[in-house]
Length: 186
Image 1 (tube, rainbow, N blue to C red):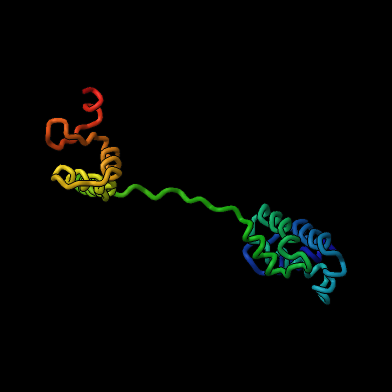
Image 2 (tube, rainbow, N blue to C red):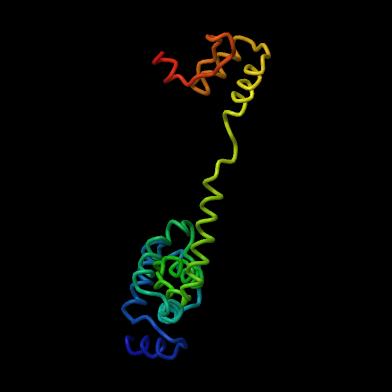
């Protein structure tokens, strides 16, 4: 019987095949997860030998760790019925580890091109780092109005002077704004 499976497996077309033991392992896992009744209902008329040969052919291009992981995931993905061989193949291929690729080679640039790209990158950094909005513009506007002699509400004076860390006063008979460090020292 082992010779017949080997012959059936060897006649299957494809670049890589599972060994007889691996195909039997896969068929056994399907059988143990779903029971003989569901397996027979799914593959009625197909001999176990033909099923193993098809498993060997369809799963031959998949790595063995991915096949085992796919068989482990099989009951969760197909809880009520055994998957067909194509579904099992897709499940196993989905368990292949991610392949990492080597880095690309460094570009072959002249020193002038490197300097141009460096200057462009630094210009982008300056543009991104440049302040886009003055969050204290409202307080500066209130200060200008107060210094121009416009009467402001008490809350406007308090909030504007605190936001700018200044003391708005009329100590010398005219309106002035002094930084808090100078105001505290006086």
